[in-house]
Image (cartoon, rainbow, N blue to C red; front, top):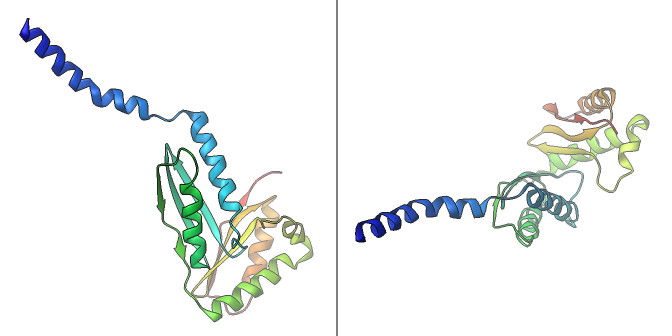
Length: 178
């Protein structure tokens, strides 16, 4: 009798980690809710500008923040905002703070005027959160975000390449049909 109880006890201990893991699985609805709330919190950050690029990945109750920001306060504000979301247990903040550079600041302003000042691309200047993000690091520019057509993507890349003082332009714009 004692041997049976001993065997049942060992079997229960062996299945305990699997039971605990099953309880930790996140339902698709819960993960979708966390994704929606993370996006909302990030776009509501007060210092977020067209020169910042924030992205995230939600895996269960864990959120990984990535991207580049000009203002170091934005990095810590993003982490604080995401940590307060109900259900988020861990935030891995991998956001890069871009180096301070007057040269990069001038390039950002020229790129902004070249892209958002061009009549064919002005419709992208209308939303509060500009869909074309301009990231400049050590004289190298990257365009991130979304556009409506391949022609707009190519046009933004051409406009950016026409700005003087830039070492290179990487066009990471994604075409999304409206």
